[in-house]
Length: 140
Image (cartoon, rainbow, N blue to C red; front, side, top):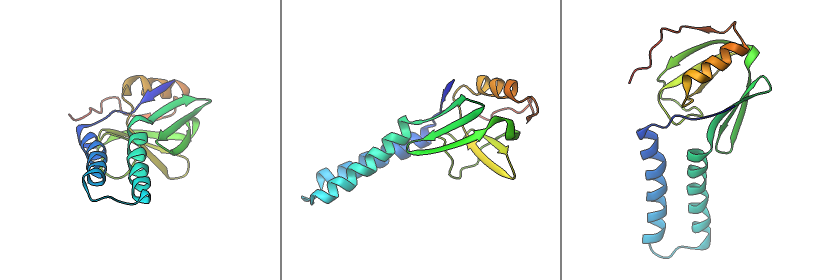
């Protein structure tokens, strides 16, 4: 089952804005060597890959996390606790509204599935031992 990442306006402005500015500087600036075009193309491609390629697949007892070219896996049976967070630090998400997943031996990952309720329901069916406070409310 696939869950796309929730997408916030802040991340839309950062990713799309950076792409447009980078491309504009190249196109509107003085003629640049082909290596500059390669660099600009690489940066814009990476941003678009992250924007369109961030999501979470639940299969084979694992959460397969994808954020552009970056991949991670979390075994569902190793998850100990899930809580909501708005941590602004780097994570494979496109939203500030995140789920902080604690698993394994002091490992953590933050994700932001668009359909959070269904995602949590699936995880809790797979591993009923997960600590989760259903009363946690997302702040919006």
